[in-house]
Length: 228
Image 1: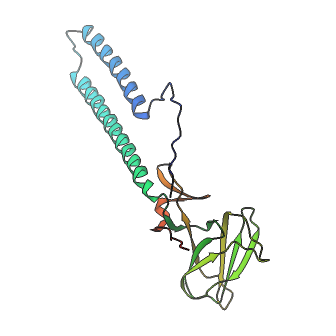
Image 2 (image 1 turned 90 degrees about the horizontal axis):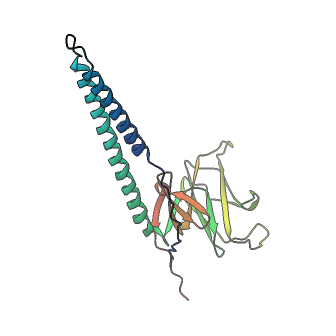
Image 3 (image 1 turned 180 degrees about the vertical axis):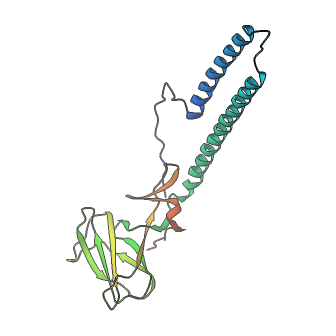
């Protein structure tokens, strides 16, 4: 069962103004200056040659348009913030689920790690290598060569039969045809979701050491239940 923990956050004493707030403050200051200048000019204009009111009307209309634009941007920013908060809240439902996502790094957990690879065409040879966090090759096997998707389930043992520690491992698949030309390969990994975060406006899912964007998730399912 996934556990969600809450951590305390120290309150900040001063909040930095947003771009919309800064723009609004600057517009207000500029508008005040404009009104002062307008009042001064009107009170000191030559009665025989009055100022052209069209210029002031145009400037007032421009100030109004800018003010409306700033107001619209403020509302849009708030809508985006609310939408992102809603996405994070809804993504909490992924906690504890098993996902298949685009990527080549899976987590070995209790002697089990799982990937899949898809061949764009039939291959003559498929070489599957599993690398540890230091980039060292720990296991090498041959894989199915038919076009399409194939699963790779690893028991956590290296080529010598030694049991390796849990952690993140990467799978590299090299496929070649009968003429030794490379065959296109895409890889996916399977992992259990342990955390959800918002990074750069994008929902990210943590899977015991790997992080994947929600948009790269291919499938979601409940974890299998082991019975004695």
